[in-house]
Length: 274
Image (cartoon, rainbow, N blue to C red):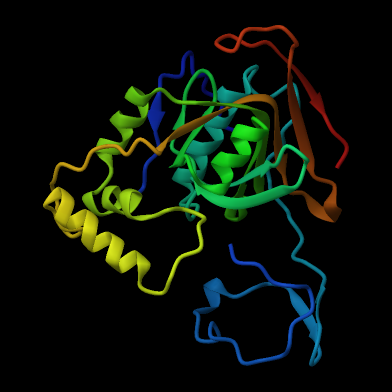
């Protein structure tokens, strides 16, 4: 059942808890994950040969609630706020994990998992190294797609929009809230660059000496690097997806009304065919 309370305003807040690639056909080999508990095992069946892996079928979704344009909030940000809190209350594992997709100026895409950190009246915020591949692509092509998948609830949220950098002050406020070890890690990593075997350990030792703190310390003065900060995705389209039997899923899409302001956008809401 959908939460029926109405949130009258959203103030900036952070939800702070704290990819590997493969081809379709793989050589058959013992799995290093074979000792995982049943709760982490897949529900799909496969046909496997010496040189190929083929998935046979998938679990059927059967969620009890429904979403339609008539029972969702008039704002997709408010609706996301409701769903995110429901995911937290349902003990969804890492509800803040999201797929971020970017593309080069010539349209070559790439995706990776990142952590969602803030929802404000303009959009969705995450933080990263500004010299990373994702940041370089956002500089070239300032559009992004986000995808949240909450498997335990058979829910997805898809976001499309343009991006903007956060101010240094906003990034600095968040950076100070991070553990000392992750702040040191931001200085140590030249994200997305090819490195040698011992590079990270040596770099970490260098930055620990530079700032006079250890990664295990609970407190320490580690400033914000100039090459690190936040991005905000300002949505132009948001879709809420709810898994249903026979792949006849509920889909509700919000489209921003062209010309409406970023701080107070207007939206058209439609139901999409699954």
